[in-house]
Length: 173
Image (cartoon, rainbow, N blue to C red):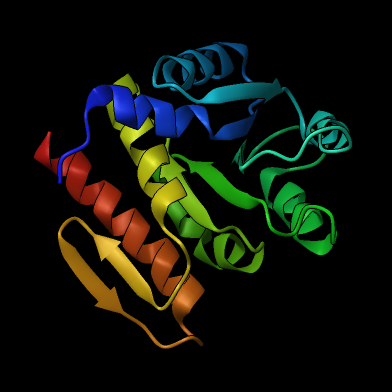
């Protein structure tokens, strides 16, 4: 069954995102691209501001840059996952390909997904949509394929398969 653009937008309008990015141009670009795709975006320019925002809102997901002054994206995710009131919020790291060398830190911070920063708005939004749709179950969807994992490798498989999917998407462009 195909969904129309209007139906997709309606579904995405229900998603509230907290975007945490300290670079003004990137935060404006990502916020605009996600807003145009139908997401409701709240912007925080630091990890500290994100924690303050979480006192008054519970978004569907947090998209956070990694390298920020003060609380890093890794530490932000750790704090979110440690709090009972915010633990269920999906936390997605915003990466550049250079961050893949930090695989251990990506896994250890407790993030639920990753998205590569892209200068192509549609590609960026598609990656966010994919990350939001992934449900950290033992079944991981990549394109039309479904990959089964065991629960001990579930999170690491999810993160690395998400990265792999995004790399394939980048190569196909």
